[in-house]
Image (cartoon, rainbow over all chains, first blue to last red; front, side, top):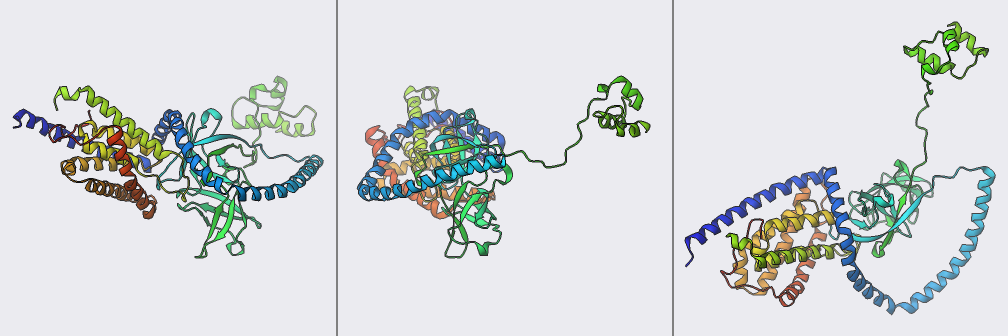
Length: 331
Length: 182
């Protein structure tokens, strides 16, 4: 028979449990609101936690990856003969292309030298391992084991050997979070070649992201190449993204070049956009006190007032005897 | 709960073991075995661990620990932060309420309960995301994830029962659980 003290303990425990549940519900809803508003503190907490757990995740992933690859390699081993023949054919065709590319590269270098062409800013990259993916249907994102210590910046483009994979949406010290092009919230300005038609590539949770706001969409053909525009200075221009496909419903979508099924390594690009001139430059004004004494007196330049500054700036590069100086001094 | 039960070393070890297994489940969920929309979604292994342990050792699965595991998973795998943890805690709460009935019934009922919990947590997540005016995922993807969760549960049960010897206890040997402590 239960003692009264035990019954009292249980009642107390149940009450405490209910209070705890209520508290958890409130905290969860607050966190959900912070997530929705993309609170930067929450992102910092996320990235610091990823930084902490990333090494242990790599350790756990080792055996899992091994087992996964053994299974995949076995399946591929069955088709090894056909694959070998296909690869030999491809190598033969690529050899001829390699020679052609070498000739074109030499010719290109000579032409650049002749024209004194200013080369675009250099893009470097860091390669990283994919150590985790979101796994669920809520977000198409992966974690990579390179971060701020490798000079990776928020917004950096990620590519595999074939095309754009996504962009960095969170940087930790040793890990980064990549948003894939297929995610619902992914938007990338692209250009469709030939014709240089601009569009926005919008992820919608499917493997074929939509081409939206396409300029002259009726003249776009299936198979046309999609590249990044470089607008906004986030992605470098001319990175290959995919090819245009037309669905049965007639909408234009992109078949991505990046191979997500075999995404083990990615390159994160370190890109600095070229310096642009957005507005006419202002005159560089020297300090009024920097003018020479006799010149100050002759020109009536004082230390106070905007006129004095303008006068000083105008006269900074003039010398006594210059034609413009007399007129200015007479003022 | 008495102070002796609170400081019971065996219970603290069990809670630590449950947390370790929960973290391992999160790591396996997040392993990059299939990336992109074409890949099948990972099963909700953390839900399986929490349901199994809550049903058999409620005193070693405090709500606060479950909430912590849920938050780690939310942050690591990009589940809407707070929503996944809340769904997990609510599932544990319900399992705690029905665990006596589950202990007296066959495994099939437990399996169906797990499947129900998987579908219910998915539906709650979808609803919470939709309420925040964010694009929720496709219902079919959530359905598949719940289905995979239900399919993988018997394997975990085998591992826990014969690997770790975590089985049902006789009624009365396990307290009703604690509020945030072991």
